[in-house]
Image (cartoon, rainbow, N blue to C red):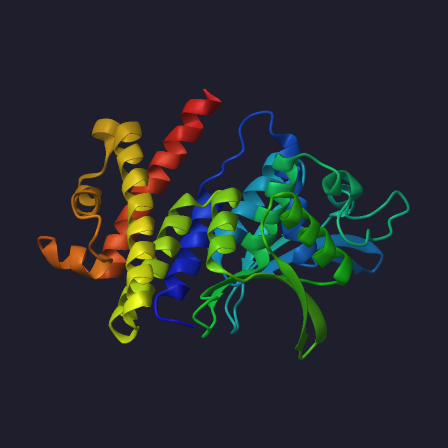
Length: 324
């Protein structure tokens, strides 16, 4: 994994978990996200004839969101988060008396049998519902990585416990016009199915669609920086193409920053102003060059992080305005 991708993974999960808060009356979207999260986590467990829901993740933000959504949708359910005491560290969200919750979400049928894949009402649901379900799946089993090949630098993988669940997610991606494919991956426990979004354009579209505009801009910037670093080793005709890609992504970031300034007005946190201003004033420079101009100097990751944070704040303000 390339340097900085783990930070982007953390930022992506945090943005998805803390943003996209369900508005009053969004019960269908809340339940759709719960279905996506619990299904890919293979959360349905039967112990001594009793149905429980048990979903584990290495990351705290998705676990807390899952608990919050379960408590919101089923206020009489007893939902807890348990932190692993041994390595590997992680978090487990548990509903001990989970039969009613599982049945209402469509994870089991009326006879108490597990439903294969995704519930039919989610598969045939609205664009908002399948987006929520896919977001839940990414939160619980999404992994942001890079490949060594120059033409496919970005990859988002979503692990699933079975082929029917993977095929359902593939159908969601297709309906949302996200280019993705299925692959069977061997593991110590056997084989499992993975949905892959494996090129930069598709990855950026997926991040935007699922509600992570800050992560999308960060990935565009990363692609631009990679292109810039290869600039001097390429022949002259490819050199121009690299520069064009960098400028195009920088222009996208400039538009996002200007929109953020417009939406937030005087509410822009002072610590974010300088990085955003430098991006707007110097659209042709790389993140590293912008960081060198800051006072005091910043790393390129710090510049990118502050710009992402500003864009996330603006996106949240936009959602609140629309909800009002």
